[in-house]
Length: 171
Image (tube, rainbow, N blue to C red; front, side, top):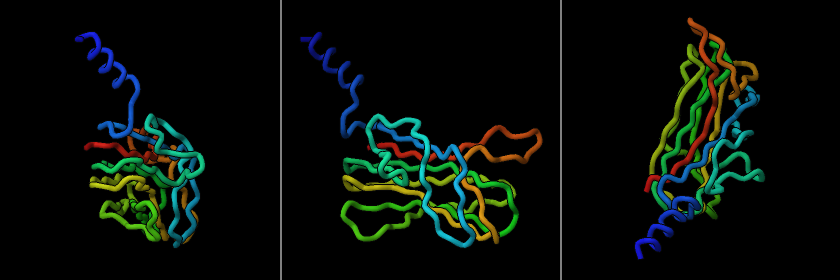
């Protein structure tokens, strides 16, 4: 009987299933995306780093969609090209399955222009088939680049800054 339980436990660890705490999806914006001046834009993610639960789809590259209700933690590390004009905002949107609207969550970040990087975090309970997406706004007077490996300031010179979006089930 102990052998049976050991086998079942090893299968559960080897093959993640729906509802498993700790499931995670991480996507990146490896190449910069142009964000027009004074326009609210939606980020499309061009690199899937980790997605065992299958929450990210090539058909909907602007969002991560969880399949089961639960408590999730959502984070986004951001990077803009260097420019001291205007402001940069990063918003997290939650889209409930079948809803005709998007809810802008409390998790948002006003990016300090002197650094051109920021971080957003939100945690909460969501329904099954809830989607999350990142929206950005900037009003520098010209197009700006979001994402990629584009941080160039600092002494000593900084390492590459990656723009990353992740969702993890925590309960």
